[in-house]
Image (cartoon, rainbow, N blue to C red):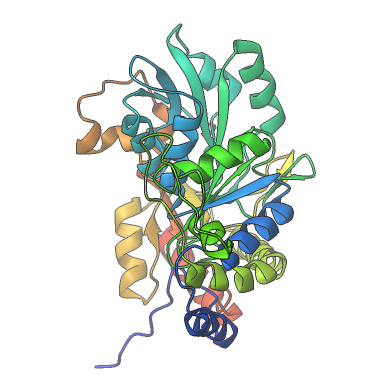
Length: 379
């Protein structure tokens, strides 16, 4: 029996340069949070226009720290999309607040002013808006609305490095944003994340919060020629990034613009190949911005085969596609919450799938993937 060559849904762009950078960090003897983390914070914040960067262990811990910084806690409600990886809602529960699920726009998969307003109550304190799959939400509209309502706006920019809205990098319209460097993202440190903030004072507190509330970092203590007696100013966390991760991140950051350009070219070719297949709606740029195509997803709209059977057929033909974005309110962890109607969320999570998109994807791969979909469309 012939072995089917599998086309992966995602491959991180890691190579010899990243391996050498990690090895140099190991050889330096400084493998915990140190000078490479500080440099990565500065360069990442400069690349995304985010003011001050604070490296953390994941985007999830970054969202947690963002809510701690904003003083969100028990009795508060935070509006989130159910259509997001479950970490978005989980971060709200970490601080004892209540996640309130809002519906999303069908074309972008993102929160809108209208869907937020539909679930807003006097207990609402903040909104976590997600740039879903790298598609930017309408940053200007949501920021204006949040300011008018007196709400804090947090950007979950986990997937959004390299995306833009109104000509500006995603992640810069809110006063605080959280980013992911998981291997499914455009740039990766294995695990890891970043928080970007506009205020230097907020950045200083975030650095304390990620390091047990210490008022002096380990790097600063090490650099001092005199003994430094640190103090612990508040109960906090261990959410640090290592210098090994940051060394890899610095190399990856240098590739970001090229990766975005390549993914957009591949997405354009997908659009051309899918244009004559009835029953499929492919993700596209919104009118106000550009996506980095962290994920290339398609929505089945009158397609003759259901989503799960499409995934099974693709798998049988060597294509490692994935179900579309999950809906947190349908998971057992949130069975205790009864949200209002979320018809668009439920349609997208039921009828969408993510196609392979990565730097090693070839035109032959795309021809094969879309060819399978074209065959299924005739059933």
